[in-house]
Image 1 (spheres, rainbow, N blue to C red):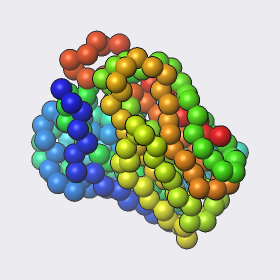
Image 2: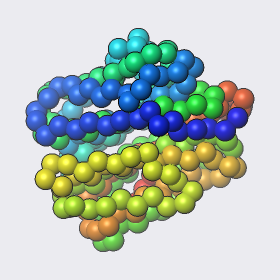
Image 3: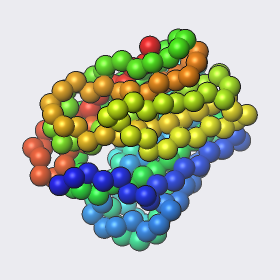
Image 4: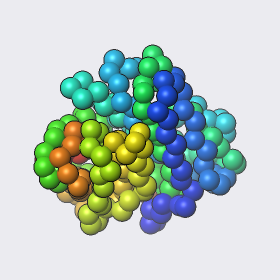
Length: 228
């Protein structure tokens, strides 16, 4: 069964000190589909809380990490089999002293189910910033998700290289912070490679994870994204 990114995805951001940020799906979720979301905030010593939503789904943390040098925290959450109906997801951060926060949610069909094992946050700075291979092996026919956040640049761009496809990106806070995420359906058992490309010298952080499909083996796998 092919994995399909539905048009039902959306994002939100804030440049105020907040302890939660909500984002609504653009249309009703379909029962049994896979939901995924990320949260990014700029600030250190922040703790994670599991998101909640208005549809009554249970969200699970896939992977998270904090770059203490530059103050970027990223996390990916998911729902294996969602309930149907309209849905707004609220992400929580504590303490509420993050000056910049971004969230994004998406919906997939195609029988995506369980998370593979987690990786770690990768960070760096370079000019120009390009992608490199990463992480653990992924199974064939898995859903791979990658998230990147770059800070301290101005009006940067993020490119998504084949076979990855963009799921959306946001630029905010006077253009100095940019987040983006991407996805692919893995075709074979191979090292997960994230292929973001940043347009200039920036401080960045990134994560990646893979998810199995119901028809595949139940082994679970995830990777780490790294940009040099």
